[in-house]
Structure formats: structure tokens, C-alpha cells
Image 1 (spheres, rainbow, N blue to C red):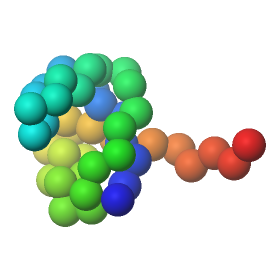
Image 2 (image 1 turned 90 degrees about the horizontal axis):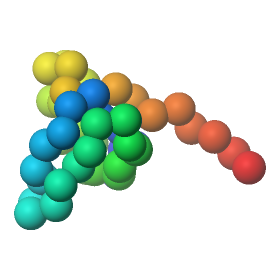
Image 3 (image 1 turned 30 degrees about the horizontal axis):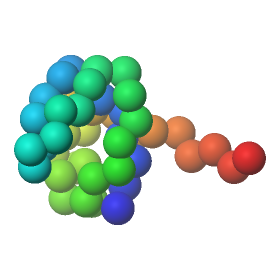
Image 4 (image 1 turned 90 degrees about the vertical axis):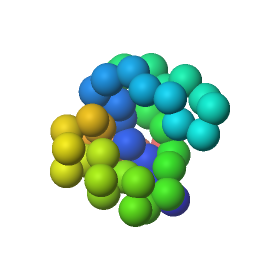
Length: 47
């Protein structure tokens, strides 16, 4: 699973993913979204 930050609002598996929020999706989906500029890779932060 990969964390991405959405650039646009979209529906994914029946859920609404909002622009500007970070979501965890499978790696293949994340690669496609990043390539098509729908999302960007989220920064990994350690608290």
C-alpha cells in the first residue's frame, strides 16, 4: 500500500476521495494516479 495526496476529487471503490487529503491505495493504482497527475506521492512522516 502506498500513501498518496489527491490533486482532484474522485471516487475509488465506492469511496469519495477528496482533493488535498492523503489516502492509502494499492501500489499499482498509486503509480497510475501519479503518472496521470491525479495524485502525488505523500511525504512519509515519523512522529
